[in-house]
Image 1 (cartoon, rainbow, N blue to C red):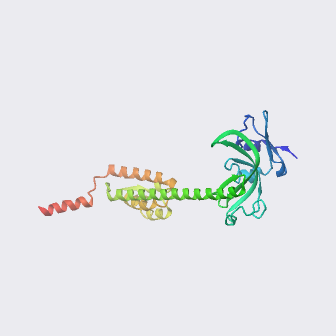
Image 2 (cartoon, rainbow, N blue to C red):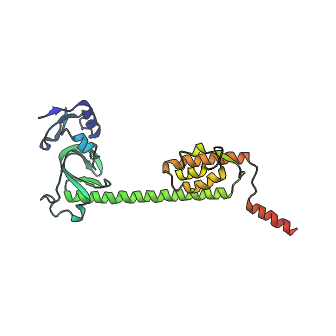
Image 3 (cartoon, rainbow, N blue to C red):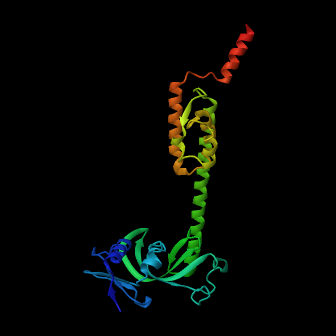
Length: 273
C-alpha cells in the first residue's frame, strides 16, 4: 500500500535529498516493504517512496547523506552472508555495521557533479564509534573506506588537540611572564564575580578565602596560569579578556612598581659609592 507522507516528513525529506534535475519538488510516498522503496524522475514530476521509519532509522541515525549516496532504506547485513563472503577482513567485523541500501546517487564526472541522479543498491558501512562512514556499490570497498575515514578523523582530532594544548601552554607562559613583570600594586583587588563562570571550582574555592568579595589581582593571575590549562576552550578568550582588562585598570591606578631586578641594581650601585 502506498500513501502520501504528511507535510512535515515531506518537507524534511525534500530538504535532505538532492534537488531533481527538473527542478520540481519531491513528492514523498510511504510504502511498507523495502522492495517497494524507490524514486522516479521525469520531465514533470519527482516521486520518492520510503518506509514510514525513514526519519528514525536514517535521518536521526545520521545516515541521510553518505558520500555521494542518499539512502532511502537500509537493511542490516550479516557478515556471514554469501554476498559478503571472504571479501572483508574478519578483523573488521567487530568494528563496523554494514547495511544494504536503496539510495539516490549523485552522478559525478571528473570530480564534478553532473546533475544526474540515479536510484539503485549500494552498501553503507559505519564504524561503531561513528567516526567512519562510507557508501559504495561493493561491500569490501565500503568497509575499507569507512575504516580509513575513521583513521583520518582520529588523526585530525589528535592534531587539533595537540595544537590546542600548545596554544594553552603558550597562554600560560605569557601569563607567567606578565606576572613576573607586574606593574601594579600588590594590594590591588578585583571582584571575583567577573570570573565565577570562567574558572574551575577548585580555583574559585581557593580565591573565595579572601574577605570582602574581592581578591588580590596578583593571586588571581597566579591561579589563572594553571587554570588556562584546564578550562573549556570556549571560555579562554573571555577569561583572557577579563584578566587583561583587570590588569590594565590596575596599572593605570597604581604607581610604577619597582621590580626586584631594579632594586638589586640600585642596591649594588649604592654599595659601589
